[in-house]
Length: 223
Image 1 (cartoon, helix red, strand yellow):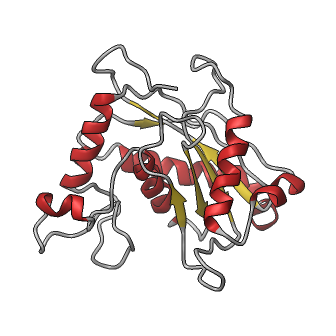
Image 2 (spheres, one colour):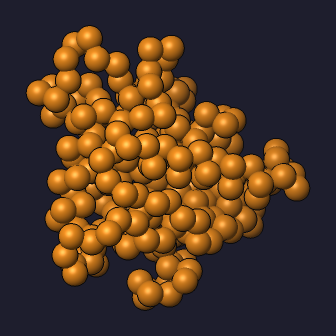
């Protein structure tokens, strides 16, 4: 990331995150969610080499462990993050020679300090949509065409942020009825703290973040 973007790296990542924040402010999501960057780190090359793997799933596992070790344990600390994202220029491969993956995250893990993380391949400004998409998974939102969403959409309805793949018929700036249902249900169970921390690597960039929503109850994400 640092070699590719040079001195513009910080500005570039903040531009991506501004777009992500805009997507999460769209009324279609049905909730007040503010994405805030609390920390932006550029990894050293040796750290990057320890995390990035030819396997996307192993890269995610390595990064999840790394971000947990580098997170401040106190929720009230200004540098504490609820979700971390690794942004990298390296290919993310599901299988050897199958490197069409743009992002990877575990579903519904924002309240788990060991699993609230994602990896995203930087492919230009459209990476903002991938970041928003993977953060959606961390918030327990399934794909728009998942069987879980069948009862919330008609066959003629377009796919939105949580489309498996973006095409000319997708609406990546807004959310489906299904996404609105699942994020609302999830946030009613947990009041998610409001911090987003970011880290940036030399060969990859790590970004951590979390949404903020007026709590329905004085309950905080269980850790």
